[in-house]
Length: 317
Image 1: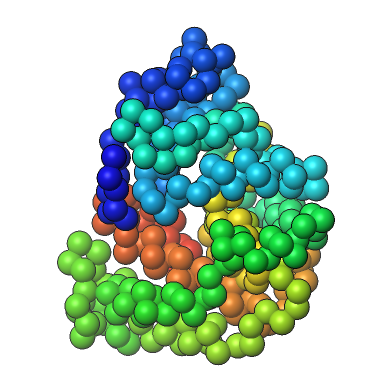
Image 2: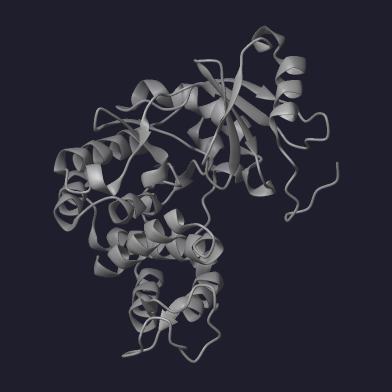
């Protein structure tokens, strides 16, 4: 099946059933149940009671299955929260073009601002998780640093897209939300954020010194939707498709998607974040929040609410 960056192959239960039965016959009798919503990168089915099947929706996610299969079993013993346990990587088949994954099912509910935003205890737990991740040092880390799939893109690579998003959804000083800002504003979204404040933060994030210490491991997509809770407490971190080595500032996004001002201060203190890294982290939160907002907010109220909070909190700092 030919595919392009814009091609999204059709995925349904019949396809998943055929792929599982052909490639993992030991699980052929287990029932499939669609997980909905499952996020923008994968279609996810629960397979029986103990497994899940994840199939990438688009080309940007096709390396995740093999990356997680290689690295997560090595990471897991060093981390204080549970992470996915991959048990197999499926191959393309029946018209589906990419590798896909089977992992152990992780029980839990997606973390929410309502339950955890004010929890300094949860904030410190997340800081401890990142500290442990950053200390992970496999024997072949020098070779890992040279791997393209583990090399994080610098924040500056997002400059053009971020400035375009600011122009699309930003208000000028004194303009009411929904008013034209002098730039083309997507009519489906309107203009809802202060363009000058976003530009000021973005330029500050690009201008501070970069990470000048040895590169460390980062999760790469560390936001509320990739945290699970059980009985109101953090229980697991999921979705390591952006796992890599470099500047840890990108993982500070969690401070602006989940935390209040008080818990954010506890998180920063526990992690020991310097001013420059914190400013770059705010830049990452702004850039990724704007990307998700302009891509999905017009059609997904849940994403609209989450990314509005992320952008607003990044501007607060």
